[in-house]
Image (cartoon, rainbow, N blue to C red; front, side, top):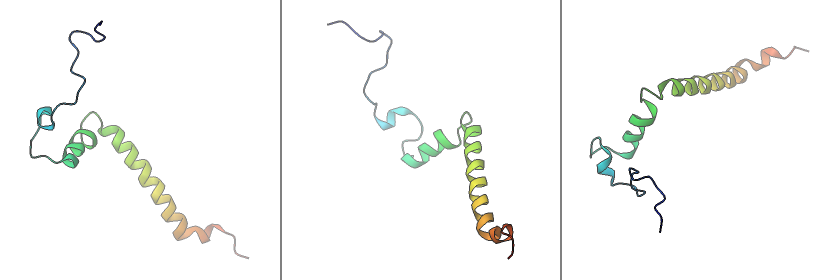
Length: 74
């Protein structure tokens, strides 16, 4: 049977969680937080998403608070 991957390819199975580097006592959430949320290469995109969500929620709060001021009084 012919080999389908390059000779230098990594194994196709997932390695043991301790073999991925980092602290072995680290929980899945803290590993996610470190690698996906506050990682330097992903931080600009995360800040953009957070500011968009903040603007959206702020707009909803403003309309619910002061929305009656935009309707003309009869």
